[in-house]
Image (cartoon, rainbow, N blue to C red; front, side, top):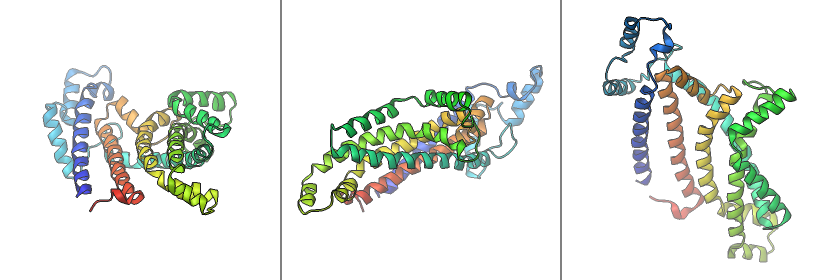
Length: 303
């Protein structure tokens, strides 16, 4: 019942977001000024708007578009003359691969170094790991991305500046996307582990002679995972948003770059399709996180 209620609320949120995007995209201006010659006549612009349905009131356009969606039609790209949803779905897996690699590295690193920092609080390792993680969490993505391109691509000519290819093309985008989640997750893991390692059941495990590695990475870590999963879920959603900046800087052919180009070109159908795909992914992720809570902590399970 709880899952059903959450899914229903998710659908309402999705409709509200879609309506907001639809109306705000129309405020950006008349697409005819981008798709017709500069010296096009007023009659030509009016004919273009009439052919695309832009001459109708925005409310009528919205309900007409909702009707088309129910029939599986998400509109056609003005620039590419292809179904907008096909363009979004082609680009989205590229973004997902980038996020999956980045989050996997950040999650593994945060678990390892967060646990190491929690073993001896205020020790040398703890202070060093905390300094690095706080620096990573505080660094602006766009500034780091530009500096990396300047140093490693322009000055040293070691890595490509943009595009998608072999492993060299992944280094800079992944490094930028890893910084923030590694920093935040590292601090969360450290705090949760310090609290868990002082719990009575940990003292009992140590008194029974259980190996310290097993105490830390098995007994304590699983009980400390609930806040970590919460933050990891939020960070995954933020990575989908942050990927827009990274993909733009590095010319990554993902959904973020497609979205930015569509906004600049006032390609309304592609704007709506890309945001719809991204929103569905984020909302579905939130439901998965709720289910993960019950797996990690049986006390939170409901019928």
